[in-house]
Image (cartoon, rainbow, N blue to C red; front, side):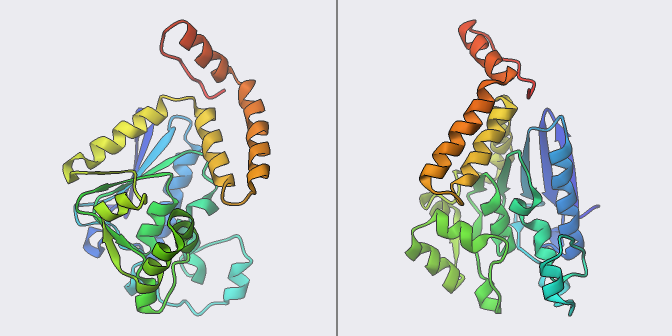
Length: 267
């Protein structure tokens, strides 16, 4: 079986990490396959939303496979300024950096078990995360002499009060699903056997909405990380102007007036 499984049905893509023997930890080849699966989702005209999950009940993703991601000894500076990635380059982590992949459509993390290191970073980089009651998560990179470098530090600092974020980052301790819910790191916690049905239910809700509007909301939400409030408000107005001229907006307003379900085309 491939390390990464991709499936698409009813406008919903599902990407599953199949490395259960390694707690779904990712080696460089699996990272490349994961990147390719996300690109496939982005290119798909049928798919409007993606669910990312792991195989089995124990792990969502245990980050990078330490046994297979040793220092390649190549030129870091050269690779840092290169846009290319490959399995033999030090910066293989770029393959699982969702912001770098240029996705325009939403991704839901269905955290079925342990999500640590790069696994938690994957979840943090998704647009929505829901977790099984048995899930545990954390950023323990400092415990092995490394740092979270797939957006984990930036995401956790934005997501939590500084004191909580720094405690997680500098101790490397794990938290359970209920704590993650209390802190707002996940949107919902459900029983393990309800995780994928609930993720698909959320995905169906998103897929039923106007694709351009969903993309616009996602785009503007990301601007909150990089723009001042005034800049972000101006950007919202500009994007609203484009959306206001779309066929989907006219269809949505007409359907509301006519008390029927809208038929969105993404135009």
